[in-house]
Amino acid sequence: MSQAQKEVYNQAIPLDKRRSGVLLHPTSLPGPYANGVLGEDAYRFVDFLETAGFSIWQTLPLGPTHGDGSPYQSLSVHAGNPKLIDLQWIVDKGWLEEQDFHHCLADVFGRAQCILLAFNAFHKICEEDGHDADCVAFAQFIEEQAFWLDDYALYCALKKEHQQKSWLDWPEEIKNRRKKALDKAKVQLKNEIFYYQFEQYLFFSQWLSLKDYANNKGVYLFGDLPIFVAHDSADVWAQRKFFKLDKQGESDVVAGVPPDYFSATGQRWGNPHYQWDVIEKEKFSWWVERIKTQQYLFDLVRIDHFRGFEASWEIPAEEETAINGQWVKSPGKKLLTALYKAYPDLSLVAEDLGIITAEVDELREEFNLPGMKILQFAFSGEASNPYLPHNHQVNSVVYTGTHDNDTTLSWIENLNEDEKQNIRQYFNFPYDPLNQVMMSRTMASVAKLAILPLQDLMNLGEGYRMNTPGTVEGNWQWRFSWDQLSDEAKSSARQMNVIFGRL
Image 1 (spheres, rainbow, N blue to C red):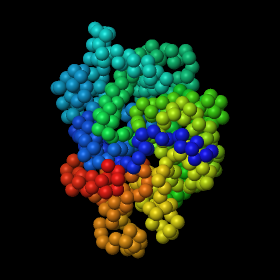
Image 2 (tube, rainbow, N blue to C red; image 1 turned 180 degrees about the vertical axis):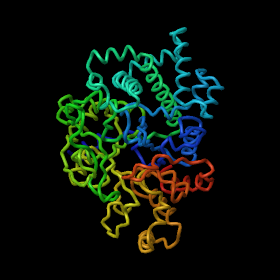
Image 3 (cartoon, rainbow, N blue to C red; image 1 turned 45 degrees about the vertical axis):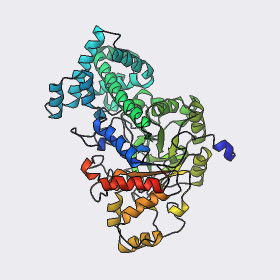
Image 4 (cartoon, rainbow, N blue to C red; image 1 turned 60 degrees about the vertical axis):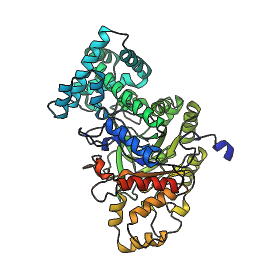
């Protein structure tokens, strides 16, 4: 493929010029709820990005999570996390009484109960006036999103009916989607199904309103798409044929990565692997539909573990770690060709960290996808390290660190003196604070896109990281407060954007 042919791919905004952005998951926004929501603080954050000269807001995946809160193990590849729904927005719509809203804030009763009250009020409005604009919009949403919403709403209703158990533990006729049993469930659980559809309508309405506000401010939303799907999810339950499962729905092999920078025993994620021959036979329609939702929600999407599009690490299900496994080839070229045929303006970034082969690089380059450069990975002592700034490429996205890294300040504080001196010598900067230099050099990189985690902008040290790979406790909980984001930090950020041509 010629360079001219390659450049047909991935040329849409926001990969059209030098830009910068901030990595912050919406759950980390401040506010009165147990986690951040798509309300006043989300809009205020967009205002901050515009003022500081950033034009990208990068998030983690937005799907509904399991009990551990990980956005990388979602109940659906399409749905939004209902915990992000702003109840004040519902009050403003007139579907929730102020008194009930304050009861929600005070934990007199939970968020789900508040949304149920709003649902009942909304349902009554629609029964009395089917031409109400919101009722019409809701009906249209159900129709347009039926390709995933019907299965998801039924799955959620059944999960509630069976005390939140995995679909693997449901009665056989429901677990195996016998038509008669499903038809009966749809009748019995009609109101619950309608509720979960309404819940998604709230999320999508609020997210798209925020996206419109951000885009009008010159800020683009950068999403994150996990390559694999949670075993206990609406997607696997509804479309088992696309996954490597036995007749009972169990996995013989599970996904993960072999030992790497993050873990000496690798990472055993536990997700089912794709049945690629079946997916390919159906012209990658499952993936095309998945990307359709991402196109709807985001301006730019990162493919997490892009390496899996070339080959993925299959671990025998009985193994407790990811050490023992094998690489199995994937039809990445055919898949990406199908995606770009369906969406010519698709804008993707490849997360190409870890064990990367020449074949993975070739696949990424063939479709003109930017890879990732992490400065915290750069200082191994070898001048050939691809993460060192002098080895960066224009078609890449550079970070001080990602959601899987410690904050840069904490990372530096935990280095020994020789390691710190190596950084000082490389940057010819003999003074502290080195974390400020790391941010500056990230912004100075030739990479077309530079992303800074908000923790780094706020100069936060130990105890403020988002996730520690290979662990299950204490992750995905970090939140910031506005007083941590000083005027000096805002001014410094804008100055870097001006100096390094990213404004």
